[in-house]
Amino acid sequence: MSDSSLVDIPQVWPWDKRFKGVVPLPGGYDGQLTWLEGVCRYIQDDRPQRNRLLDWLESTFSLTSKAADSRVSFLLKVGLLEMERGVCGVSVPTQRWLDSGDSTVLIAQIHSRTQFIGEMLHEVKTAQDTQNALRKRELLAVANERYGFGWTTAAQIEFRRGWLQSAKLIIANSEKRFEITPMGRALLDRLTLHEPPPARASTNVNQERPRPPRVPDPPTPPESRQHPSPGANGGVGLQDATSDSPATALADELRASSVDSADHARFEAAVRDAFEFLGFRAEQLGGSGKTDVLLDAPRGTGYSYRVTVDAKSVGTSGASKGQLRDQQVDWATLREHREQHRADYSLLIGPNPTGERIFSRGSQYAVAIMSSGELAQLCLQHEKMPLGLGDYKSLFTSGGPVDLSHIDEKIEISIRQRNLVTAVCRALINECSELGPMSARDLRLTLRREFSEQSWTEDEIQDVLLILSSDLVGAVEAVPDAEGGPDTYIPATSLDVVQLRLGKLAEAVGSSESET
Image 1: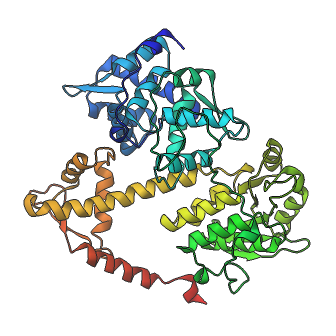
Image 2: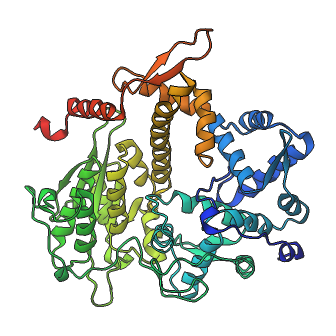
Image 3: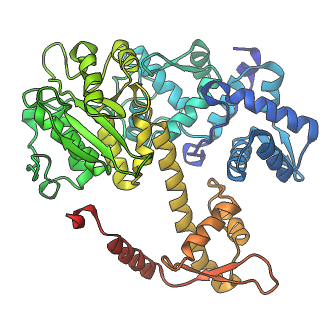
């Protein structure tokens, strides 16, 4: 680490004042800072106003107005850029990085204003030092369980990874587990870290601790859990489950059945039910010469796809210890199943797939590999933010460990849009009585004051207004501007009536059960 990083570590804001959201930059995990350097050089040379900088980003890097605005907003709020009399400039820490090439200066600055930056470095180091290096989903569990974030996707973990990896503070090894670099360790020694409250963790953040619970599969002895009542097809009977929700019942059964080696059909049924919940047509086949579960995504000619699924339960006793390993998989048979059923993709699913060889063989045989815990997490996420079969296709398209980043990104976008719908409706109800009809621009200015971290663009707000003002939704009403300007909007009815209208629309759509 250079001398510059040892002198000017910025003072860290109180935890509750630090920002929760991180925005990634273009360039991938290893190239974000290269992109940032190019932007900073442009700012130094041209001293643009914000609108001019946004236009340059859109034209130079083919960014949407929303993407350009969100990145500039983030760089400003964490103190990497600054505005003076409407002109953009680079901050002192950023200038120090440009002069010295010391990327730790940037990360220290972001850490000072953003939650779970240095803390994520600490969790990576602690797990690695105890020979339990974490994957993305496991790090998400740490963020939620120790720091209380409540994130439903790993997108914010991925966004932080981009900054830390491009700064050469962490790497992802061949098993996609995170490891801290010597440079990361040196910076970590300099940072002031947040200590989670005792209610969430009993250990001190500066002490070594055992590995936290992993998202994939905390092994549960099958005899210690009651089975949900069987459904009509022998699977989980969701209506009879004692869990809080259908997704919770599915997740519990997936985790339990995946380590019930005495009843392989139980795990197959749980996998089938889980994918039915996600919207697939799923059939449990099993038996000699057949795949365990066959998935169909009926999306029309040219868009439908089929997946053969091999579901392997592994007991917690003996050498296996509830971990699926390469020697338990007949790869040639998985390829034959895909050919036999004329499927497009293959999926292998089991508890805690472990070892570099299983993932390399998955890549060799074009078999995607998923843990039963990851499928359980998908069910829990789907209940909160349902996605379509086209979105889930990305899970199967490449061999080796499943890549959930596309799913995470789609959920983040959906959550952002849903939050905007709520904010727009409430802003119109609260403000129109005094301000009168409001345009998308009016709403943007209003929402920026109340939701400074969101940075919704005018285009995003206009798109939401068009949806809310449609005849089917009827939440807001468009009022043509008397002077021929952009349409303005007023509330059309109460939010209770809007919910009633949407409920009636859902009833009109019906369900797959009504077709049989």
